[in-house]
Image: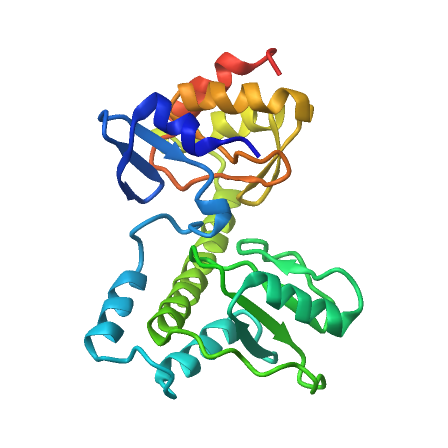
Length: 267
């Protein structure tokens, strides 16, 4: 893994704030964030109601192990994606994966957001969270009865996770509708649409695209140079070769387009 922390710091200093799909540095540089906490901030930063509900739970004093609405809400939120499945949550993703593998006797399947066409046939699998936390969530069919009970987690974080999944459900629906509308378009005069078309033509030179996920095509030996060139162009891509970058939802893709044009033929 590339030391992206120091790569950012030596170029731009500290990060002052993050909003949407951008990072803002102490040197007044704006970076496009295509790493997004390894995909856990896939909806962007400071979006939706996640941070508000966290504060609301704290304000109510719901900070210890008590039965709260957060547990019910998390189940409801996950059932938006998997209506007939049961849900358990654990203190780490590693623990969730271990439990899942002990049940299925095979490597755990990890479900990722925004892959509506990917069908999961396993009767137990782990969710990739739409929020930067190390918790683990296992989804399993009702005939499995030997799943350990959920861990007692910090209620404000459970509620935040529930809100993140509710937000993800809404964004997934919007994403599918936008794709359907885009498929119906034959002529477009909007700059946003023109930018996106140009970007769509450039992406295959560098990545294999699966919905919003971008998997590098260049040799692994060339990836560090590509990462550093992207950062020099104020774009943060995934610092790991085997972890996909995320195509952000931007109004204009000019910076990304200009960078990719300079890299054609170099990787």
